[in-house]
Image (spheres, rainbow, N blue to C red):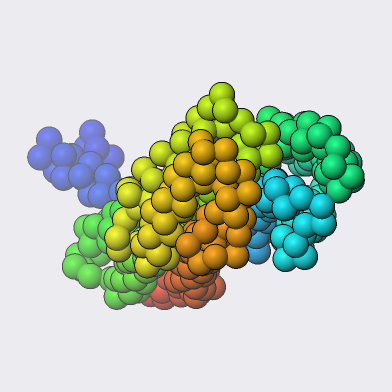
Length: 443
């Protein structure tokens, strides 16, 4: 077949030449459109695929990181903080018990001796627990300091007891030296260790309540890209909707909603754990320490036959702080019932302390000692035990609340990480399904 020769433009009339130029331009645009559209569709498809998969991977990674942090908080940080609290408390109890035993004179009662021995053993055990954090622990100097000073303290106490049994007055000096070592060096180190462990819990909780911005922004950006692709396809193919891209968009909406909802639930549980667990635990721990400090000052006043008021000042200051803390304890917080019990015991203790001071003022040292360490239900020893036991029970309640909320925060994220990966892969499949019919039109 002979191809008809196309007339030259200069051979045509102006109107015919313009029409020919338009036909040739339309044909060129058509060829450009035909050759370029598959490449554009492939580029769009690859971009959408990458965004969908990236949204799932980033979300899964963020959720896994948060769950790991919560698991570490539950399995390591919280037990370490509880151990540091027990170490701090045990040292305080030991110091108070040592003074109580000394007042008895000669061979102290077995119950009092056992209380001191148990507190020292508990402190030593908690030092072992704290040593598991490793040599790179920044609190190593604090632990080392307490560990090296503990045998020095117990040695001074035993020397004081030996002299006390022999009736040597120097025993009181050894007891005062031991108590001074405990109050000025060992307990401050234990307190800093406990605060550092508690701060680690607070820091983790603070980070967890912050929104996972990457896991939120990237799915939103992917939704924006899917919407833009929808508009492009609608303009090119004169079709309003693309079912595949719509399903991919719906999948991303589910992922985003799930991420925000689960993250919010987890954050709320974490905040409850902080407000109803970590904070009250810290308050009750400090109250228990103040109780033992006041008790140690009370017994040392008897041992030293102090009339200068130095030990009274320590006692009154500790009691004032203790009263303020318990008065400000929320009535709806865990352990509030135990705090109410502790308040009653504190009031009765103060009454017993006043009776002890009255006896000392009369020069009745045996009577003062009986009020301070006697077995009577209205004596100071019974009220201190009641107060300490109530605070200990309150700490147990608040700790259970903290661990329960942390566990709930972790469980609320359990399915989100694998779910995010599954939804992102599903969205990618929908993208392919939505663009494939358009690509087949160019075969």
